[in-house]
Length: 349
Ligand code: NAD
Ligand code: 89V
Image (tube, rainbow, N blue to C red; front, side, top):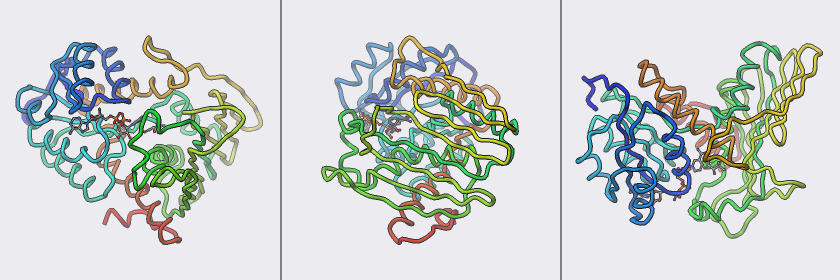
């Protein structure tokens, strides 16, 4: 795709990285008529052949060859962070729009370079930050925006589990930075989405599991102009029932409180009226419990991307917006390392 041309659907695209989570991408794209999967790419020959067979696409084991040979409107990058910059730079060099999985990068310089490379070519660029697209999170956002709880002044966004995340994602074991960049990044995005951008934050981390290199427990206190929000994540929480991979939310406002609890139970207290609802997560032929809300959010963020391409609008989770999220995420590590508050925006300067 060149900056001069305006592509029309069906948009021709490729998925790069056909590992664990990319299976959700591939299934969700298959439900979207405005896109046409033409190629898949993975350095793992077995994985890429399986994806090519299952989803009817040309397999590549080399991303440079993919870009050289295929006429693409966009790529969907579902590899892990160390290869994101290389893939985004290839997309920019070939004038191809891109979606990149979270976390965009492990270092701010890489994130800035990617965003600049795409912006310089005026190419649409979105980060696959899908938690805000989960059905329960969309409901919470609508409630807050409707004024149901007045002005939010406190939040808690929590992801605590003892699920063996390392079984499906063994690469997490060796990550020098782990739970903040892996899962708290989603929760920090939700905090900004629900309550707003913080001015400062304070973070503390622990490593409970001695088998891993990075941190597996993190608590972050965000200070917005008129609100505080706690973001907490743990991969070592042995509670009475396993709710992985659910996120729990509390948002308190001047007129009420929203609580999203286990199994998507939503309680709204609004001006003295209490309503309780067991949310029904939209289902797909390929989705299943316990991943259903996250799987549906993959479909929802992909639909958002197609809408943005159709209308020429900027995605909610654009590269530029993600730089602010990366600042808060990486700033949390700075805070934990030095033991003091991080002034939000420092890493953006
Ligand atoms: P994975 O290791 O299972 O898959 C990554 C794939 O990329 C592998 O198959 C690997 O062979 C391939 N790959 C590596 N280098 C490559 C290269 N140079 N060219 C082509 N392919 C290459 O990892 P995963 O657990 O699926 O995670 C992938 C990404 O998805 C990570 O960034 C992770 O944080 C993210 N993720 C997001 C969510 C979410 O809800 N948004 C959930 C899980 C994982
Ligand atoms: O986003 C992720 O990479 C996953 C999970 C969905 C659990 O957060 O680890």
